[in-house]
Image (cartoon, rainbow, N blue to C red):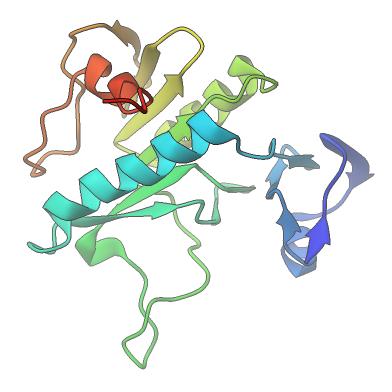
Length: 191
């Protein structure tokens, strides 16, 4: 494993060459011909990521509807990105001939979830969600803990800002009701 220290590596490489490189910590993404390093997750980011995947999987896994993967590399449409949460409908999860989960997911997630870190550019993260939407992703969330808001990106690339008691959209077929305040209340450790 390589420890990445730069937010943007100036080396331009092909997607094929990028995928041959060792994984970095934090994860590197391939966007528009350049390698970009994601910020190292911190407390709020880590808690939201774990809790959200857990909540989604508690509802979707028993009924084999979908599965939420934390930080799964997804390569599609000329990019290789690592969403904070990548939710795939059950039938789209890639399995090997042995019936095991595949290591490489060369397709877009059905639902892409990003959690904005303090040093991250909102525009760059939103660009990834819009790219996902262009490629077929049905739903994107951009969670902004600094402002207690969640930007929603739908499959037709409509963007909507939700806050407070707004009900968050989820993939069709998932029986999950969450408000924006529910997400940010998870950060209150004393509750």
